Length: 456
Image (tube, rainbow, N blue to C red; front, side):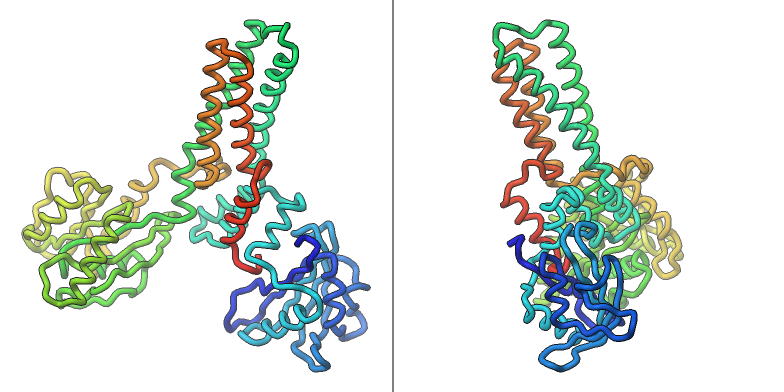
C-alpha cells in the first residue's frame, strides 16, 4: 500500500473560504499533471515546478473546469510524508473540494485511509509514534495548555527522553548478554553494583514519567464534571455562567431540565466537560423520570461533582439524599443565590470545600473556577511537565517496563542466573520501545491511526 498514491480532503467539510486537498506518493506529481492547467506566465505544471512552490491554475475534468485553485508542489524528501506531495487550495463548500478530489481519484490516486498521511510519515522515518500521536493531540486540543503539551511532544521532547531511556537499558542488556556468552567470566561485585545503579536510575526516571499520566489524560480528554442538586436551585444558570453563554434553558419552573446537557469549557487552561443534570425528585412525568435516570448514570461516570444548593432556603430532604449518595465522590458544594438572605447551613464536612456564588450576577464564579482547577490539578503547571506528559498507551507500556525492570533488579541483587535478568530486561526494552514505535505491531499501528481523520 505504500506504493499507492493517496489523496484526501484535509479541511472540514462545509461552507468556508478555502478547502485543501492533498496528495502523497510516488505518482503525486503525475496525477496532478493530468488535471491541472497552469494559468499565467509564472505558473508551471506540477512535473516542471521546483519544490516548495505554488502555482495558479484550474482543475479540469473531462474537458470541464472544476475550480480555480492554487497548487503547491512539495518534492521528496522535504515533505511531511517524505514522499512527493501536492496540496491544492480550492474554494470551500461541500461541492468544490469533492469535485477536485473526484478528479484526482479518477486520475490514478486512491482515497486515503484515516491517518494514512501521518502513518506514512512514521513509516518513512519522518516522525516517531509518540510524535504521530501528538499530531492528533494538536488537532483535538481544546485549551492552550493542551496545545502546548501537544507541541512539545510533536517537537520530540518526550521522544528524546524515551530514546535516552531505551539506550541506557540497551547498554546494560548488552553488558549482561556479554557475560552470558562468556560464562567463565562472572560479573564482578563492583560491576554488578554499577549495573544496579544504572538500572535504579532508569527505574526512577520511568516513575517520573508515570506520574505525568494523570495530568496528560486530563489535558487530552478533559474532566467530566456533573452539576447536580434538587430542582430549581440554579444548576442550568451555573452551567451558563461557567460556559460564558446561554446553553441551558433557565426557568423558575422546577424540572425544566429533562435531559443531560454536556458542554466543554476552558477552566484555567484545563478542558472541563460540564454536564447539567435533571434535578432529583419524585415525578410521574415519564420524560422527567428518564432525565433523572440519565442523571444517575452521568454521576457514575463523573470525576468531579458540583453539588448546587439554594442558599436562600434551609436544607431539604432532597439535599440530604445528594449528601449521602455523593459521599465518596470528589466534589465542591456550590451555595447559590448569594444575593438573598442565607438560610442554608453548610455541613461541617464541607466547610473548606464550599464556594458561594450568585448565578444571576456572576459573583463568585471566578472563585469557583479556581476551586475546580485546584481540585483537578494540584500545584503549578510547569513547562518541564508539559514536555513529557504521557498518554494512556505510553502509561501502559511504561508500567510493563517498570514491572520487568523491577524483576531485573531483583535478579541481579539476588545473584540469580543472568539469563533470568536478561529475559526481563529485554521485556523492559521492548515495552519502552513501544512508546516511540521501535517495537510497534501492525495491530497497534492500526489502532492508533484509525482514530485520525482521513485527511491527516
